[in-house]
Amino acid sequence: MNSAEIAEEFKDVDFSQLERSLRHPRTFLSAALSCGTGIATVVACIPLFSVLVMLIWRGGKKLSLELFTALPPTAFEQGGGFGNAIVGTLVIVAIAALISIPVGVLTAVFLAEFGPDSRTASVARFCAKTLTGLPSILAGVFAYAAVVLATGSYSAPAGGVALSLLMLPTVILTAEEAMRMVPLRMKEAAIGMGCTKTQVAWKIVIPTAFPGILTGVMLAIARAAGETAPLLFTALFSNYWIFEEGQSQIMEPTASLAVFIYNFSGMPFENQIEMAWAASLVLVLMVLTINVSGQFISHRSKSV
Amino acid sequence: MAAKTSKAEFSDALSTSSISSPPSGSELVKDRVFRGLTQGFAWLTVGLVFYIVYEVGGKAMPAIQEHGLRFLTTTTWDLQKEQFGVLPEIWGTLYSSLLALLIGGFFGIAIAIFLTQDFLPPKMEWVFKNIVEMLAAIPSVVYGLWGIFVVIPMIRPAAGWVHEHLGWIPLFGTSLSGPGMLPAALVLSIMILPTVSAISRDSLSNVPGKLKEAAYGLGATRWEAIFGVILPTASTGIFGALVLGFGRALGETMALAMLVGNSNQMSISLFSPGNTLAALLANHFPEAGEKEEPVLMYAALVLLSITLLVNVFGALLLKQASSRLGARGGPK
Image 1 (cartoon, helix red, strand yellow):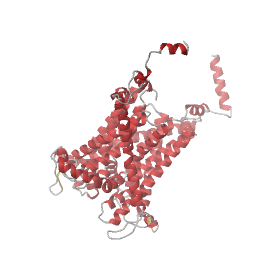
Image 2 (cartoon, chains in turn purple, brown):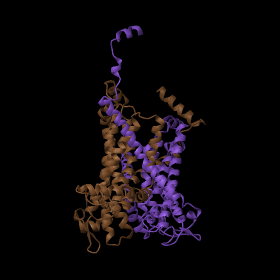
Image 3 (cartoon, rainbow over the protein chains, first blue to last red):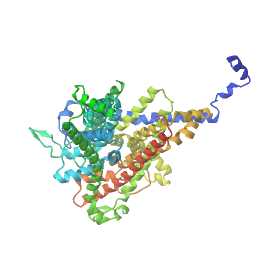
């Protein structure tokens, strides 16, 4: 059948009927719903912009070097800063990372390499997923019971343990995902050369999956850095430096940015509230920087 | 027989070759040890979940023995009389989370549909997807601060008007004096939005494209295809997303501790202050004495059981959803 014949065949068909008029209720409903979801999506973006604008507007004008070097102000004092809270956050998050990264990555090695289909793996995977849904405050309650009560004091390590609990599932699940992406042929080649599975894991799987693992770790760190609830009664808060005159008060209550914001947001003094906004700006910048660079790493490694 | 000899010769040749050699004894030992080590860490993760339950449950034991199930059904919280009940907190936890789920769920699913059904060019989809995911990166304490200074002043006039004119409806029965259920639920809904939309988006994009094409072929409009074919196919996954979002809302602490009002009362009104289990812990734990501590541990155990139940249910739903679509041979 050539095109002339086709034209002949369909010459009586009114093609205009195949087009939908917007006045038809079915088409109209469809278009309206499309607009509706579009509007909903745009509306959902408003809070983010509102938060960012407020942070820049109220936190930005307060920004100065003093914030990073001074100690928190007392009730009627003007000025001041949250240098100790920044140091405290870094110390607590570092402790959490030191605990959760080795445990998480080694667990992931087992899940991805040694026994992906074993009973152990399926139970461990399920537990990791369950831990993802653990409310952050319960991580704090646990660390309080397990560390604060045992050592007898609120401290940075207690806060670190609480945060490590929240980082662990993210590290495990993303690291496993990254290790599963390693091409089977590379592993087969190594085994063909006489490598043991351990050598394959260390020399092939972990280096190849490294960008993916790093991304997961950074996402976990970004999440942990912003957590407040687990620190409220593990690290508590302090108005002093954690390292002073060569001495570390690591087993003492430790300040953190998140708890600083919480404490200062409820105060009836203008200066303190402005400080809470400035600290929020710093915290959000910190979290977003870690987050975005983590995603950048995984994006780069995928495109290579 | 001949094959065996040649195999032996072959392995002989291999062991003397410089290119590769079978693992030596010490390497095999290292392999065993390392395998055992990683398996140990895997069990450590499992043990951790049980250790959390054990530790919190153990510290709560004195309170459980003293207050029993009355703890869940009474409403007083009096340190002097040593009477403790968390019914208002349980109510507040469920009520605020349900409200948040209603708002966040609606927007989350709408976004998921909008970003998976080819409404936008892929670049724009990517931009919106990242904006919504960035919502998850903002720490909850910052949302709390934003809620106090932006959301509450913004909704207060509207809430006052609604209360004045529609006050006879129990939902608007009290006036909004500041912190309350509605601002808390609004902020909470923003916080669960990324969870709901990301998981729904996954399950929507797992729906085989052919189903949609077939619906179009039968003359369905875009939305008839979405409601008639795509949403039902992805429904288990979307339901799982909602359940996980609900679980997240149940455990969320800071935004609620700052916005819900911390008042020990039960009310259906959107504008009245309330309390949640997580907020109760955040507010009372730092200065809890010896009397209050086991009671708070008990409250933590209640919260732990509720969230674990909800989360396990959600995870099972998602597992079922992915295996169902997998069995149908849909493209990943």
